[in-house]
Image (cartoon, rainbow, N blue to C red; front, side, top):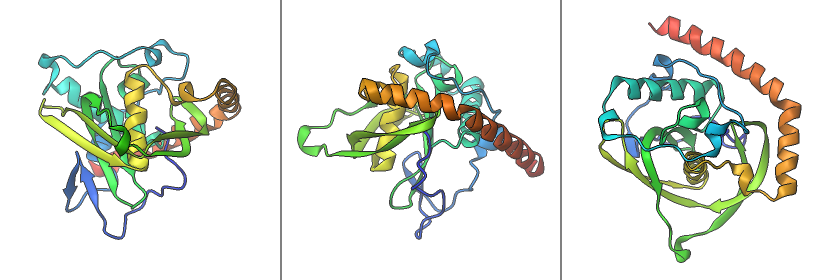
Length: 230
């Protein structure tokens, strides 16, 4: 999911960071995964891998170096693309996995990854729809108003196969739902009315060159930061 302009990427008054859902005493501004990873090309609406359900992570894949490298690459790619979240199929990988680095409205920073995620079906009484602007790294440029529940609970596993439950509210809840949609083969524009969807795609064509140019600049900046941190 594209980062929302109104949710600033700054430390909160409390400085709270939740890594894999757990409060941390301290956390670096640039995630270690982003410094280790390689930036990959972000897939764009229309590419087949974005429009079908991703396969589950197999038992024998948990805990492998290849899976850890994939998560590193996703964090690096998400950073240069200025994302709040990124699904594996957004870098062309057919796998039930997404990562996030997302501030909520209270200034709490949420960072993590989850594999084989499943969103809880919330009871009607626990659902409150909130309409807000939403964008996507695979639909570069436009934002559109979309109503989603303001609370989300996702259950899955971490890189080593341990059970993981993450709960989000507000903007972070939107991020969790957006990325879960990706892994099912959906994009946020699929939830828009036909006219709004066409308008978003037109805006994408108008501004995608500028978006791609910005990503290239930030990729160079990340590479320079990586060299100085070795």
